[in-house]
Amino acid sequence: MSKDRTTLSAAGPKRGIVGQFLHDWQLWLMLLPAIVYIFIFCYMPMYGVQLAFRKYDFAKGIYGGEWMGLTYFKQYFTGPMFKTTVVNTFVIAVTSILFSFPAPIVLALIINQVRQERWKRTVQTVVYIPYFISTVVLVSMLNVLFAQKGGVLSDLLKTLGLVPQKANLLGQKQYFVWMYVFSGVWQGMGWNSIIYLAALSGVDPSLHEAAKIDGANALQRVIHVEFPALVPTIMILLIMNMGSILNVGFDKVFLMQNTLNKNVSEVISTYVYHLMAPTTGAPQFSLATAVGLFTNVVNFGFLMIGNFISKRITGTGLM
Image (cartoon, rainbow, N blue to C red; front, side):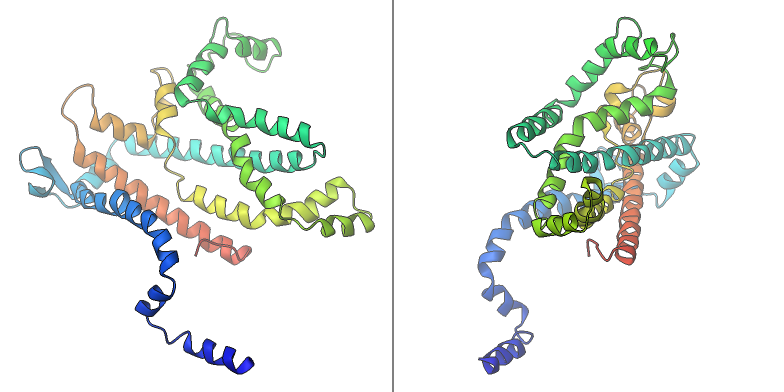
């Protein structure tokens, strides 16, 4: 038996690419729809990236425009909106990670402590519901609840002395980031906790029993038994968040944006939209493409840095 295993293991590495494909053709067949989807919607559109280096001409199309090199990148880097859009995007993205990322982890650990199944399912259902509210409806709710006059929650915050009486939570720029971030925490933490609850379900009950025998209380078991089980999942999701740090959600920012808070709400995605659909003048397709390409390159850099740090510290990474 051992001789047969040795023979198989020795023959395995010698199997070529075609041989491996024929050996696992069922798995490749299952993977085929995903490969086709990614190729059509992710790789084929990449031919349009050259528009960042050409002057777009409606008559000549993407390929026929004059070659401009790095002109549009220089235009963005030296323009007045570069610092504003990059700083605003980083502030919103980093603040979102600091508050939105830990929230579902804490919620999952709390829900996991609930022992009555009926109550546990009720809590899960309640915290999942906000995720299914559309962004348009969510922003409409914010406009009603946090209106300067008559807003239920804004009046409550003013009564408690947490904000000044004349504060305009939806208009004044110092409140925009907090409104964006905490509304996102409320909407997404329940749904995002699902993956952490799935990871906690795989914790060996014998570890809890051993911890109880050693005298560990509930908090100590959470810290020393449950949280370590979440670390690989946490690191993978953190790396993925790092890879989209400049992709602050366009729809929500755009809907919350107004003339009073535009100094802090104009992020890269909304800036690209305004370049593509300007209120005055012609659309600047080439400049918008250059800005988008710059964003993707920076996101890729953060992804690789996050993956490298994670592998060095925890041994867990995407590749």
